[in-house]
Figure 1 (cartoon, rainbow, N blue to C red):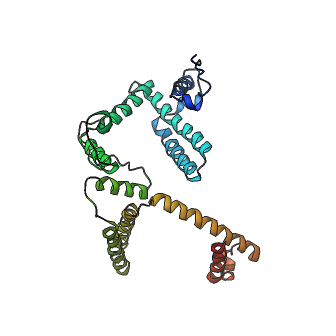
Figure 2: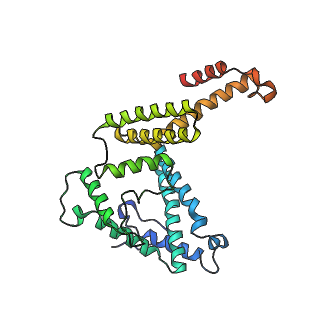
Figure 3: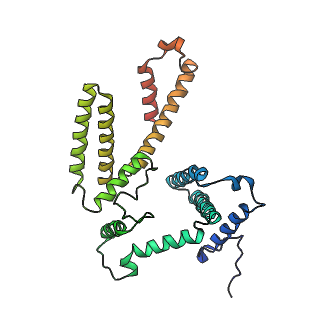
Length: 280
């Protein structure tokens, strides 16, 4: 006997088939109706832009914590943003939620000819190479053929964007064969940064500093490190250790010195508290 579908209750895990998305679309349509939510009805694509970024970042945070329940909740928040904007598209007559899903379904079929057609591949790396070649043959909304790097959003965090650009061009052969070439490039760029610093030319220093960061992003890719995740982890570690330093300064001095008591706290003392934090 088939269990009747209740749009208010998610089906058991074994029966997950996506029907609950219909309920989400219905709810969003209700919120955007004439007698719906005033706040929702005031939104447009631009006003919702920051929420898309925030919700995606919260998904990443939940993944980093390994909290499956939180990942589920945050993915729901992100899905809401997709359906919200799809319904805005429906209201203005440009596209709707079914167009969004149909477009990604068509893209998945087109870019997986080794699954849905008779193309043969030898491993995951060849799948990625074919993906980029197929993508390069596709045309954008302006009718022009897309470039290899066109699919890397400018809105990504800079380090993540740098690593994604390296991944993209590597799939079509523009890359070093092993990490040694990438590591040598880091040393080369650091030397050029040193020269720029010695010259005192601010514009040149900024330019060479960017080259160093880009070279490091490529090295991260070559050694199998997610540069964005590594930097986030280091910042979290720094924050934890500095909070210990701050706590010790409050214990000993009642807080960080004001401009009037600037000489009260030495770098050596701060470094001692930092080493205490590292020892923990």
